[in-house]
Image 1 (spheres, rainbow, N blue to C red):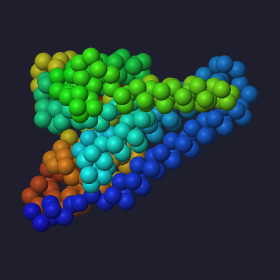
Image 2: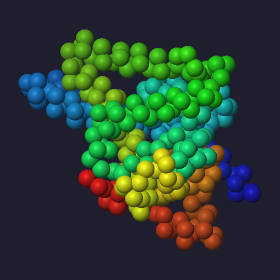
Image 3: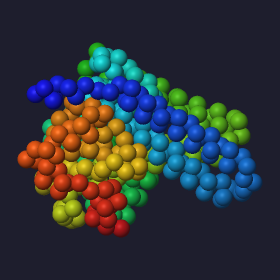
Length: 305
């Protein structure tokens, strides 16, 4: 119990890594704008640059989105209301989600992980070409938003600032205006490639990366590709992805130790490494060792393309 009480968040790490993501996103946008202006290319080449730039921007938007998850567990500030406001400002503004609404969905995910009632269900589908096409074209995004909306509408209270039945989520509206302004201002400044890249990153690569990450976290390597897991329970699966550079960035905000997060969701991601060290000296060490892997190894195990 003394060890558990010692696991207070390291706030400096929370904000250094979150603001580092903002810096990386800004530098990526600047790079895309510079390359787009420097390269004298036709529409086909510009479209190619926009897609490449969109992948880069979408990657860092996905990085920021992992902190929406941390905010859902009230871990961006000591005070809960302050944590929510900061999450919506520094994350929700970019990804278009209200942390209070997302919390309703995400807590259901913790409660029903591996069951047919899990609202975060990207891992129900095999990682095949259809999955990637649906993710890249926004089909999975629309499907996920519809499912999220159903959960939130059934649980939201207007006084909580959430989007309930017949209401509009203010965070989503402000985020749409903010991201739209980036695109419009880029076009006005002549940075067409940046405008296209930002829209592509936001609408296509961000949801694709988010759904792929969820599959790598929760889909069993023994899952049957033909089974409908919205009808048949999949079973709970979690993994540890290590401390490599890619794992730390793609699995930011503690997603690289997602197994430990599901064991104790209230622990800040800044202390999960301490939890792992502690548990490695206990009887659960063999279980943790069996679940240690990498994102690339898990991709190879789940790849059905």
